[in-house]
Image (cartoon, rainbow, N blue to C red; front, side, top):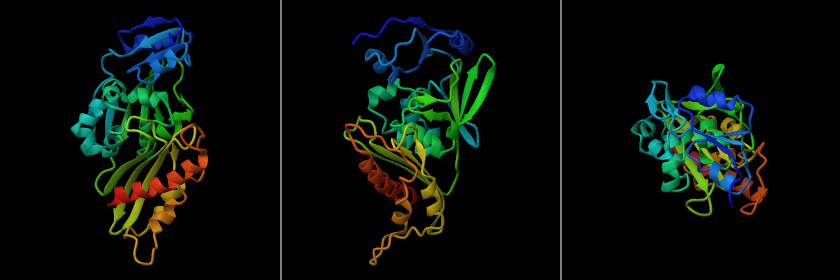
Length: 289
């Protein structure tokens, strides 16, 4: 299908982009285009103005800033994957990014575009939620910080105002003692996650001291599995013994608490709930191993 007609603007600065967005027209922002272009072709989105940020200076790159890593919004998934800083300092992001689509999409798709698209089936929003990322947006009035817990408002709806451009995100570095894993169940290597689990686990001796768990595609936004995080504190990480006792599995049985998984061609809600429990256990075991 051919997209509906629209005006095309390629600003030369972030300030100019903000001014266009503040014009009041029905404006869409184009970054890598891997999410937006299919919507345009299917006429599920039909903006009157398309603002192409692809060549804006200063929105691309990865910086190690000590207690956090700053990732520019136009940094591609491939650049995230190839970054030694990401692999060393925020490995959970590298693990999840490696599962995003295929190499062709990862070379064009952007970190910020994936976050601003706010698709609950996307892999990276759950990682941002688990790591307590802070997003930085800019408008004609200046910059604003948005915690990941407040950023994903509803299905395909980020907490960006109509005149705001996502500049990038601060990704906290959790430091020594933490283990990470991203577990994803999908039909094919390039498909969206039916369910995904981003897990960060800090252990003390043989037990869980702290855990951060976030779920992909278990509601209209990524979901923090708070019940599991609480239940895991102090849980013995020893392998399942001859008695069959599995305290990790028992804690992860609460993974679907408070979720509202969708029903679609790929899975019913009850199946997604089952997957959330199983995959959370696997992710916790892998992150703490």
